[in-house]
Length: 637
Image (cartoon, rainbow, N blue to C red):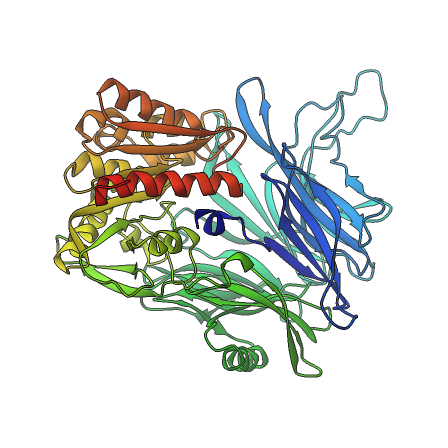
């Protein structure tokens, strides 16, 4: 059973060709490998997929692919590498390939891959739009690295982030925006024009400052004009999209303590218009459709994920899709043909991992294309319900409760599963880890404790590290609520977390050593000051340091410093190529637990990163976790 739940998603990414006749899928292979498959939609009968590209995951991995034209795909390939002898980094490059797998070419970085380079470009660039009027041309945001000029006149001397028009077939390049040292992003308008530029400010020590400055270019061209200055509190307009037809930028900013969606005119007036705000939760971002990323609505999550559409036609379509797909309330448009007459749709729910459909709006016909997790099609999954419970101070904490699908609801073994982040939240829908443990007879509670994102700045507090006492207290109160409600049996609680969730699991075991009978932590933070030092040589060190903060909470909130307080057995998992949370965090925790004479085990996955995207590794993780929890909570192997 663990192998079926732990298997990587069968469709990891998908894209529809401009004419709507082809679908490209990224699907998992062995280990961290992946293949790019294409399907011709013009035939009749069962769809046939052809693999045109594969990477083995050692180290090359496939992040995703998109159509540059009806015959040409652009794929981002990445892997982990050691730089400077010690620093683990992620390096990505962009490759172009025909739909039949021929003419594979790497889109070279300007100076970034030369032996004469004075530095290394970690990113191979990002496609930010299509070049107007040129089929197969894309706008690429790329980092220029200067070359040594001694002994040559052909050296590349530009430096910084710029935008190029790149022909994906010939690789010919035309500069669109000259590189700038302080540029951090560019936003195109969907019609081949770069309309917004974001810049960063660097302090005297070389670290990024908090503020980001944004500029816009008028519709008729000309020099960059000021648009907004964004700080960490997002009190000012933070742009993310541009609508060329309306000459508007779309972005988020704080309203009454929560993120709301705004449009801002890209002209001298700069009038801001409120598009949507919710009185309980943040707006998460904008929904777009098609190759030109036309804005159609905003997304937010209350008890469930919801969308406010400001495009009436799409709102009507979404309502029709919900009626046509009963039992699959989570519906999204994955991609669209150029004319938006053919749509690639994904739909799923808490008990449905999701299925892909192709909708032909001209004929009003919709056909199934692929399943997200076909290996679970014959397994009864457990419904997820939204609940609230009281914290010690009376605050109602939102959470999701999943009970075993066999109908058991009282005196169960239970797992509290805090989310990662900490700037994240759980929401309603399919979760492979939750469903696995529910299938094994456990109740699973996922608390959106204070310190979670999505509920506004008051709920986020100072974040889950600075405000760890509140966050961990809310998590522990969720466990007590399970017992008080009779859902969990007395002494039948375990805690399981990934990343920040792993930190929360360990810290809960430090502060409430008798509450949980087993602790499972995947890629956890265990030492806050060490987490800070992991970013010492990077430009974002200042932001990371400010996020963690200084003071007594660093010592009191680092579980590795208090391993002796833990009573329950601890199971740790970590990958050797984790750049989010270094392996040394788990190694330190394991060392301290062993020295304190505690029952603990550290499982190290060689070559895997923070997300353990390997079906065999995930199966092992689920199996060992269930074993540890079962022995501790149920008293049997």
